[in-house]
Image (cartoon, rainbow, N blue to C red; front, side, top):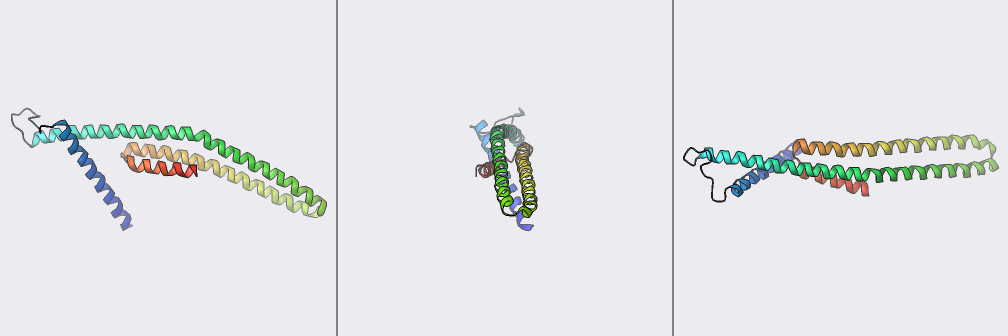
Length: 181
């Protein structure tokens, strides 16, 4: 457990450092000649720097929020675009499996009837069991597709809540690769 605590603690520290660097960069962009008397008290002091930092934090946050919204929209679009293909592939697989089971049943049934009439009951039970397993597989595949879509939606929601853009994008890309494979 200590390893993961250190790992995530280090990631949080790195994320904080990146955010701080972006704020400093934004302050510099907004004030290329240096921070002036922002609060109008006649002197340049720490209060002016604090005001500029507040403005920069707001801008960085808004930029990040816009990026999160863009990533969410992109992920959402990809899920919507991929869903019909996944559904079609699962449907085609299920139809093919049903046809193969029916063909196998007919083939085995005819051979068994000719060779040993008493074996037919055992074969029928075996085929019924195979049909149940195919049905279970189909149900499981449908659940996995649904879970995948729900997972993408949850991750997109997490992006918006946690501003964890890069991690979510990487996870979405990994899951997209898994679907393609």
